[in-house]
Image (cartoon, rainbow, N blue to C red; front, side):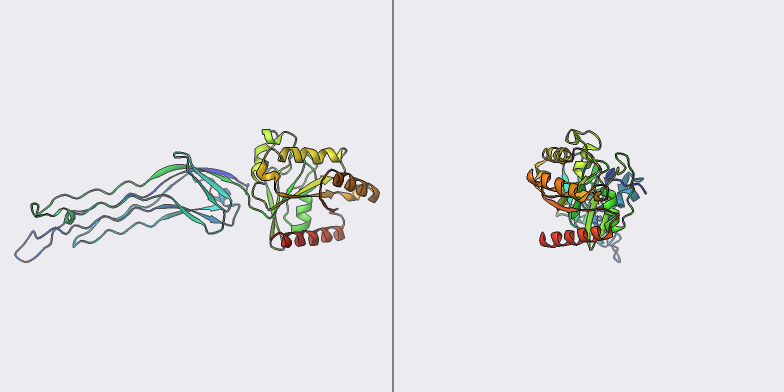
Length: 324
């Protein structure tokens, strides 16, 4: 199932039930007083957050929703039944915009529930129109139409850690080694076209699509990349030791993130990957160079070294516990 992080749909709340004209039936009074009941309310439309980032993939084929209508009133002042409300389930982290009104809603916590369209009010039965001068009213009103709108959903992942870096920095491999996420791995740019998630001791890790120079201007995967790291708790810059110009790689990432203050201000660490391809002395030299430029190097890793991955995982757990 393909990952979907944008979704559009139309929705309409239910129409209110009609009020009715009815009369009391009493012996010797074939047309007693008015007793027409009011119509029931139309169903509201709600959005609700659930912890399932694949839910948009499951509903992508559906582009319209309609809540039920309220029931008409009945005799003997019986009120028509209100319609059931309609709930549209969306992943936690969704930004939902009513494109007709510009109103925005954010679903940030699991179970959060927001009414986005109100159902129409029920009509009034004829008993409401009785007066001293109108003992036998024939009036009743129709139910009101429910609100309707067009909505756009944009998913911004909520994760404890975002793994960022240039293409082929080893992010997917590291995620797989830590969490068995089974993320796709390849040796060409943009293997990861959509975020991959994994869980490590209860913490959610997101492997974000590869960043390139100019991403803040929309190049490469550009804004798709940047959108998905606005809500992560902390960022890990993965830098491959296979590449030339490692310090430049770090600066490219920093420059792109600096265009977004809400991202640049996050806690950030560097993780040096693919240490099995170089000598220990080279690793030490790179670490010193990066630290001298202000980088915080958290760890050095190789997915071919189980001890290296375990040590890194333990460090990560301690870091997350401390940042709660």
